[in-house]
Image 1 (spheres, each protein chain N blue to C red):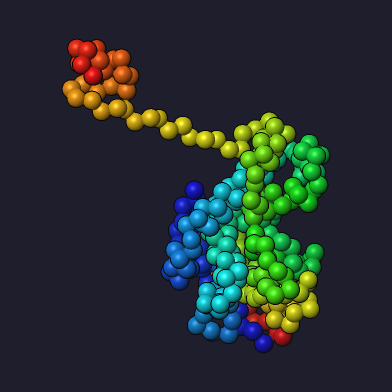
Image 2 (cartoon, one colour):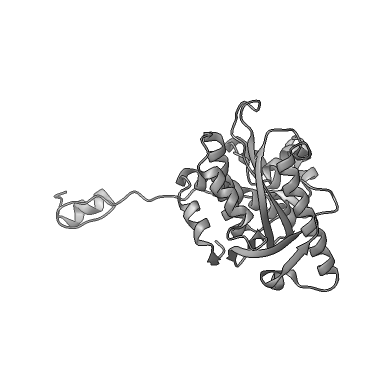
Length: 165
Length: 119
């Protein structure tokens, strides 16, 4: 069972970006992601992290526009990956970073966790597929709340979800 | 630039440690992508139409709009011509005035006149 909360990461005129926090943890999933790869010995992964951080900054300025994101989940959900220009590398020895999120709208983005993508698709990686699966469960609950009339943009900061595993 | 009302201090710290060149490069890529997208919306054009107009694949146009594409000047020129809109403009920097004894002017001949022929 997951207790899910949303903590503000960047709030701007254009877009509000929240990080997802699980089970009363001190750190959000995104904070753990940053800590893990900031100290990586792989220079490609450190560069990927820098580009992901810059992308998030630019999304807050330009909007969480649909064309900025890679669709990662199913067509029925809003799970996607933060855009990343992957520097040329030997893919057999160096994976690339993936950070997953829920793009609710042009003005609301919820960032989850991620990891190193060494396989062609995330489903074959237990860590990445776990991250995506959790976001899909969260998104399913959010869609239900929206269909019941909740204004997520204004309510997300005070929202706590309980997601069954 | 959109005004930021709040930014998480840990994220701000991490962002400050990103190389300025990467931050600037990313900001250009996103700004160009958004500009192209805004033009498409304004002119009611689809990505497929832009692809056809530029002779590229739709996947290429999708990449242009992703905010992660490292454009060549040639590509930007092709897109500008296809859309008949400016995407990039270069600011003109004026040459600083030459400093001379006495009166100062950015026109050497005028400087001479002001200084009675002594430049």
